[in-house]
Image 1 (cartoon, helix red, strand yellow):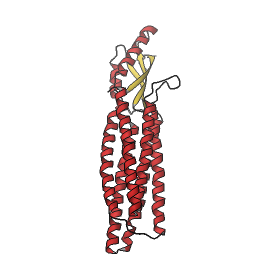
Image 2: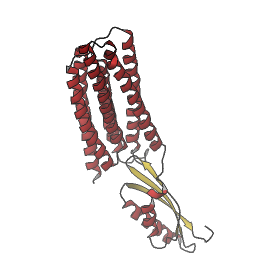
Image 3: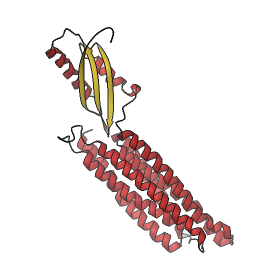
Length: 298
C-alpha cells in the first residue's frame, strides 16, 4: 500500500470518529438530561471524550506522515503513539469524572429515568460497535497504534453503554413497580462505567508508552529480516540485529561479519546490498549497517 493511501484512509477513519462521536454525545446528553438518567449523561461525557481522542489521533496522523528532516532523521512515526497516549490520558480523566458524578447521585433525591433513555443507549451500542470494528480492522491493516487505541476507545464506550442500559432498565422497572432501591441502579451503572473506562485507559496507555520507549521486535518477529540479510553474498554471519518500532514502521540496526581480508570498498558494497534488501521488506523504513571482520571466535 502506498504511504499516501495509508494516511488518507487513517485520517478518514479519524474524521468519522470525530463526526460520529459529536452526534452521539449530543444525542445522549440531550436525552440524558431530559430523561434524568445519570448513567446516560455519564455515557455522553464518555462519547465527548472520544471526540477529543479522535481529534488527537487525526493530528498525530498528520504529523506522522511528514517525511524525515534534519531534526528528525528517523521520521515522525512516533507522533501516532504520542497521540495514542493522549487518548489514554483523556480516557482516564473521563473515567474519574464519571465515577465522581455518579457517586454524588447517592446523596441527593433520585428519580427513575424516562424510558426514552433506553432507546438512546441502544442506538449508541450499535453505532459504537460498528465504529470499533471499522477502526480496529483498519488499524491492524495499516499497523497504526493510534487507530487501534482509538478503536478500543469506541469499544469501551460499547461496554459503558451496555452497563448504562442495564442500570437505566433496572431503574425504570424499579420506578414503575415501586421498588425504591432498584432506582439506584442508574448511578450504580455510572460507577461501573467509570471503572471500566479507567481500566481500559490504563491498559491502552501502558501499551502505547511501552511502544514509544524504543521497543525492539522480539527475535521470532525478525526471522524474515535475518534470512534476508543472510542471503546477501559475502555475509558470513549476523552479529547483531535490532528492529526498533517507530510508529507504523521499523528502523533496523544490524551488524554483519564479512571476510576480514575484503577491501573497504567491497565491504561497503556488501553493506549497501544488505540495506537494499531489508528496505524491500514491508514496514522497514530505514536500515543502518555496520560491517565487522569475520572470525571463528565471534
